[in-house]
Length: 150
Image 1 (cartoon, rainbow, N blue to C red):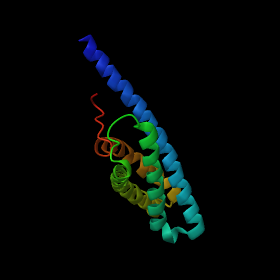
Image 2: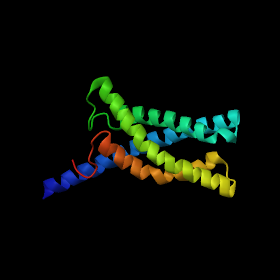
Image 3: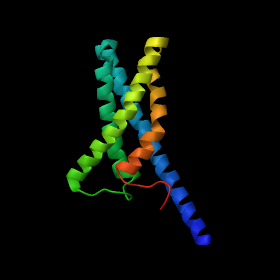
């Protein structure tokens, strides 16, 4: 009984640490996305909002993947396959975030066009909505980490 409780606490602490690291990387990645979005809108105008969003998401997600790969889950899950394995995990991560980002961009555009709120600010709502699913699905399918057990 005591051993089982210690195992539960170990899983809980591991999830808190991993979740904190993932959140830190996500905040930095989102800051990068917002910077690219703001610069792109300033340089090219709102007429190019979709391609600017796509570029901003792609680069911020690639950064987020690399930071998570080498810091957040470095000693956990699947990291095999050398360069090909890294590329496959990156593609999986980009696809997972593409789905979340598509929702985020739709929310951003709805807020921008319906309420006139700056797209850089409107982008925050979509990112917050997609975060929990991106986190869990990334751990499960990119690195094969089960968050609910050891």
